[in-house]
Length: 166
Image (cartoon, rainbow, N blue to C red; front, side):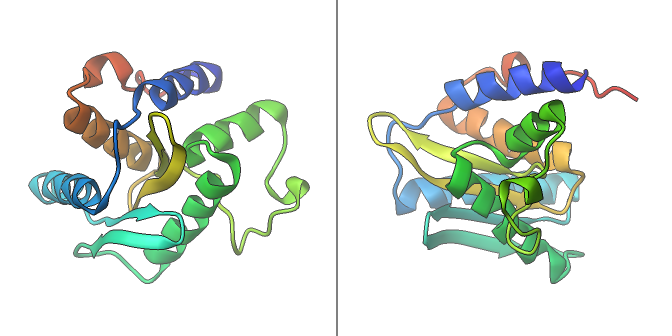
């Protein structure tokens, strides 16, 4: 799947994967679902679920490094600033031939790499994000999408990204 096709599918994901509500319990459920998925698959990831400015769930699994929480912070900053998934923002910049640095954002604080997905609550807007770090960026993004689909009872097969182009 090419960049443009991924971008169109990510936009659909961002439209479809909205929560009816978001609180500490929902954050816990999403975080533990992601943790269970990672353990079952043997993935070494960091998981962070937050309202902006307030961490609600965090875990770091085996083989993660001190770099992973930094990636979480930087990807989460992209969602907070642009209200888009970090992967969607990265694809948008790629299509436009731009970088975050050209938009005035330091790479020390922002990363338009996949893995942070907005928590969009119906009637309230984007209140936070769910972030995964430790896999290739497309896989980080898709793990969050898969967990949100399971939580919301949505068909992941209809929303997942297509095969990656080589």
